[in-house]
Length: 291
Image (cartoon, rainbow, N blue to C red; front, side, top):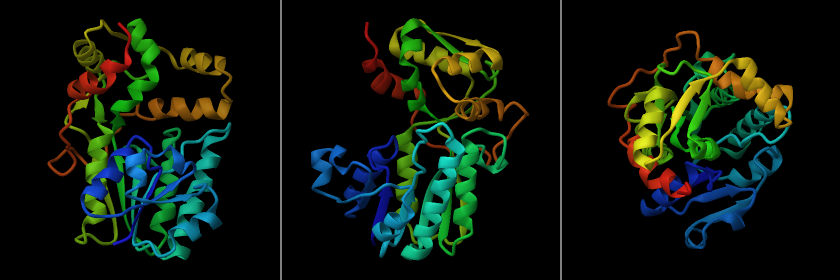
C-alpha cells in the first residue's frame, strides 16, 4: 500500500505520519520544505519537494500512489478563495492523471453549506472537485481545531478573547491528533468505497464561554471572553493590513454559522473522538504561556 500525505508538518500531518509509520507504512510525504521534517521522521518516509498548487508537479509526485491524504494549503495571499480554487484544480488533476484510487480529504464542518462560510467555501470547492473524480473519497468534516487557540496566545496571555459568535452557541471542538487517528483508520481500511462523509466532532460541543472557563482552569490563568461586532472585528483585521477578501474569508468562518446551522452528520459514536479540551490545554497550551 502506497500512501501519500500532503502537509506532513501541519497540525494533523505531524501526528498522521508517525501513526502510519507505526502501522508499518513508509509514507510518501508531499512538502514544500521537506527539510523541515524532524530528523527521526525523515529516515522513515520518502519525501518529495512539491508546491501543492503546481498541478503538473503534483501529478508527477503522486503517480503510482494508492491513497492520498489531502490538505488544501493555507492561503497566503490577498485572494484566499482563489488559492483554494487552484488547490481544488490541482488535487483533482493529480488524482485523475496520477491514478490515485482513494483520497481522504481534510475538510470542515460547514463545508456542506457550499457557500457563505468564508474560507470553508474553499474546502467545499475541493470536496466538489474530488467528487467529480473516479476515486473513492472520504471527506473529513472536522470541528474547530483546539490548536486555533495557539493563534490567540497574546489574547489569552492578556486574559481576554474576542469572538463573533454568541458566547453560548455551542460548536464541535476537536484535537488535531484525533483527526489524525480517524484519517489513519480511513487510509488503512479497505472496507469503504464511493464518496463518503466522516465528521470528526471531538468529545463535546462547546461554547466560547465554556472554552474560556476550561482554558482558564487548565492554564491557571484568568480568561474572559466577549462578543464583538462584525464591524469591530473587520476594523481590527483591516488594521493588520489584510485585504478585504481576506477579511471576508476570516469573518465568514464565524458569521456563516449564525443561521441556526446544524452539521450534516450529527454527533454519534462514529463522529465523536476522545481528547478533551482540558487535557489538550494543560499539555499543549499551558507550556506556551509565560507566567
